[in-house]
Length: 158
Image (cartoon, rainbow, N blue to C red):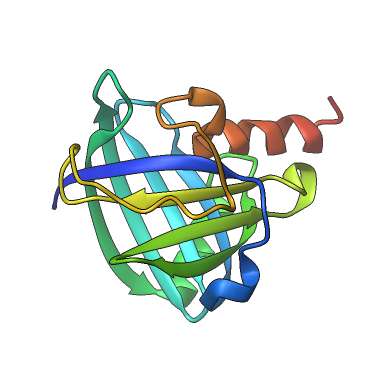
């Protein structure tokens, strides 16, 4: 339990050849209210439930609590989630001393690729690989909850 410090970027180049791991991810939201997001995720053979609090003004720092749960229980909880379950492939790419989590979205957001980087503090320096594009940290359009709403709209035909 604690503060999550994260930066987000669009991806504009080839990164897959640098990845050391890839896994299919399915995630949904039991609550997408910004002050108390509750996410359920299945990654490979593992399940997780995550609670996130409100972010700071920059969108860089927010409260996060996560617990691993059995994958079958996570799958059962996904059925209870708000419409708009997200499907993506997550790649792990080591750059310098950091690991970028690069999400390639499927379905209605096909073609969208976002890299996330967790940092120890807001001022920590990090390497920017040449495949990293525009920073979108703090831009609500790139929050996974907003992307899930896009999935809902697509499923509703609009």
